[in-house]
Length: 248
Image (cartoon, rainbow, N blue to C red):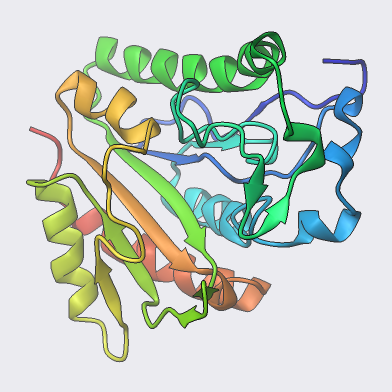
């Protein structure tokens, strides 16, 4: 990392006693100065391949409404994907949605490790430390992982407005699916548009490995691309999240 590179983690609302911890693995689109924008044009960093469009402002609004802390990853998923294990084949992509990433072609193991140490590790160490602090204070915590998804992929127009991703039995996921399904005109995906198939990293590491439940939500990007849409879906989640059962 060079002088002028942002910290990998942005924390808002730290120290609150809210039972929610909101995390955004793909909130940002920064690239370390030494990587020269990965050889991509600037407009590539406006697209879904670089970040989860709309999710950061939505998360901040939601955190403010509920008095909950928000942990955001500042760097683009194209530098290193913080929702993949460092040794996962999709941790550093050579191409995304048909677009080659020149700066990731033939990356060496040493270069990948430098990205992990500079970006991936500090982000996840901070989440783990926050959960440890909360456990030490006896504060029950619902880990809520927030993502957004592109409306169309591989020629398929995705009909879902919101998706709930989970790994089998999940009390929180089932409760949220039930609540969302009661909302008029809302198309809800159960493990859609993605199934949690073992490629995810954040929830398995920080929730499943600790024996705690979690909630992972996906919101379609065209619905939250504007401040009005972000406010609409933040208000929806602010109304529903407090209705979920506390961790046991």
